[in-house]
Image 1 (tube, helix red, strand yellow):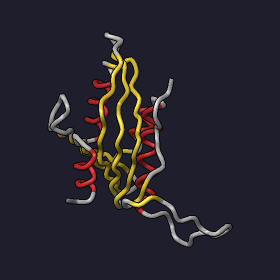
Image 2: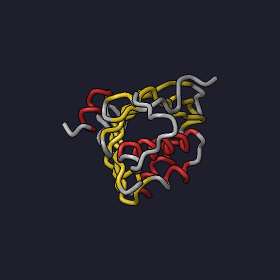
Image 3: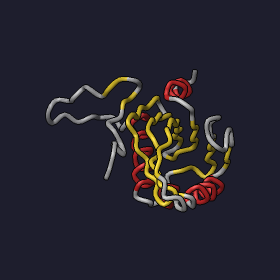
Image 4: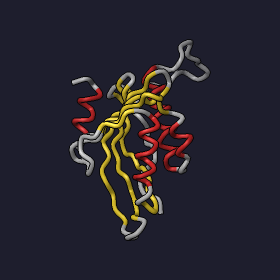
Length: 164
């Protein structure tokens, strides 16, 4: 049974996209940085849930930096480089029979995307299911996710994305 959304309607800059162009109108401009960042992050989440991890890693920069928050079991660990992150992800995945990403709020601030949701998982050996809150800021640079930073709550993630 599926619960929650894999990808909710995003917001840009703290405001819902509520402007609808006139019928047949076309923009003379390319997508904004926020729209590009949202699209890349959305594709990453979709690939995670499809278990297309190599496709997901294609969306990350080679010099990716991942920082866990103080609330993680591996608190305040910084992983540098896509290959190191790939290896740590493989290790992490090895303990789960299943793990899905569900988001209930996604918002872009320029090149940074804040996602709030949860990991829904089942342990490989125990068979026990559970959830873990997710509050992450992803920074997009040159069409790739260049930084992942995990936070203990949504307010801190938004503050970080805004540069506070």
